[in-house]
Image (cartoon, rainbow, N blue to C red):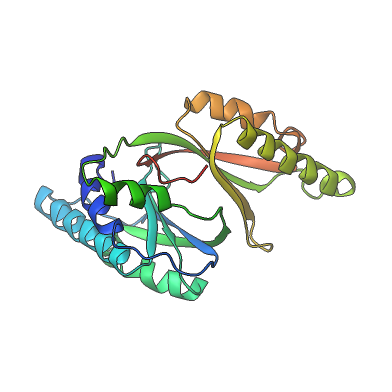
Length: 236
């Protein structure tokens, strides 16, 4: 696992010093396993992991990182996720490339602009500042990466109405208290949206998304992931 659950206490301390900047788009970094990565010795793995955690702490202290967490899928196509709040996609890419797991060719970076909800991590920082012993309570969140589906072009005449139904459906999931965060990506991006559930059973998250009108029509397709996050990071 890219970020060991027990190691995230280091991130908890570092995030306390993050000063919220003026509103700007988020940038989501998916750390993906490098296909050419080789087998490491235990000592090499521990060295890289230690450097990786130190870098997470530094990014938080620098006011760049507002959320991070590992993925636990089988097979694993994503090692972990960073959410940055910086000025540009280019800056997010540059910072992500400096992570030790990338420098050491363990991971590659896949960076996207994301219009997520405001105040990601704000409650987490408030609680941990008030009481540094606040439990991390890390849990698995169904994380849905929503792409253009196979029927995107075939359903061109109905696409806008189906996408509107999709947005209403996502809003209804939030109203039911199912979601932790959601938001769209860049308009030209094949990855159109992230929908992150609260720590509900993974199968329930799948069932709810498969009932989405645009997903049922094939205009959108969903890629499902298990994402670990500390409590109080997501704002909804």
